[in-house]
Image 1 (cartoon, rainbow, N blue to C red):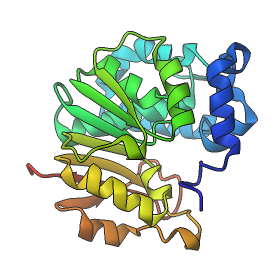
Image 2 (cartoon, rainbow, N blue to C red):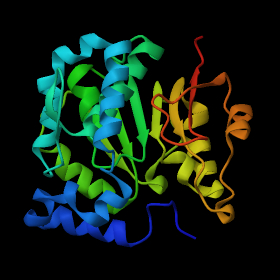
Image 3 (cartoon, one colour):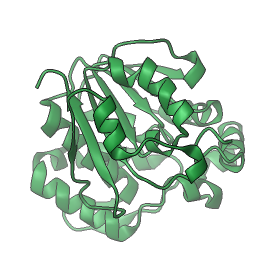
Image 4 (cartoon, helix red, strand yellow):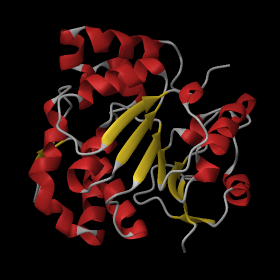
Amino acid sequence: MSTSLSDNQVYPDFCAKANIDAALFSNFRRNEVYCLTLEHVSEEYGKLYLDTILKENVHLLKSIELFKENDVWGNPRVFEYENVGKISPTTLRYIKVLSDLLKLFSGLDGMKICEIGVGYGGQCRIIDCATSPSAYTLVDIKPALMLTQRYLDNYILDSVLSYKTMNELKVETYDLVISNYAFTELPRKFQDVYLKKIILNSNSGYITYNEITPEAFESYKRDELLRIIPNSYIIDEEPLTHAKNCIIVWNKYN
């Protein structure tokens, strides 16, 4: 059994190669293999994410030029959007998640954050350039982390970064845990590890939930996670990218 939907050997192999091959790295965000797993947000969904940002947290657009620097590396597809100019729709999704986090948790400054399933580190960089977390732990399979570190090493970040695989984690308390789809794409036995080591010890959390794993994964369903995670509740995914998607949120201080 794979460790997740993305751990299909083709994706990890590409990440490992892009980490050491300058030509691959320079265009990794357009590579067909990579785009099957990440960097596949459409131009149309980019517009929907932008509309949500404009509605919920328009002041974030004051930092749009800083956010656009996410697109300097990897040669992503960018599109022209009214009010912001050319930007990757994936970067707009990361900004929208930041908007949600600021609204839900009243600021991220000084927080110790852990992200499960980090892509190439784009969400981390968006959060770091707009807020001031004290520490940021990125958790993924080793080949993905190698590419993530190569990407993030091109930026000056204020947070103290650490890169961990599942087995390198210890039981630890975080102020905030984030996972955009990744956690819910894991088999249950791996979800149990993350619940024990990270999620159930975290003060607050934001998990974008989807329900696309094969039956053999026995992944936790939404209602099961709501029973397991104390103080958790559901908010809508906006825009909705799949019929069963939602966002699971908790905050032990509320």
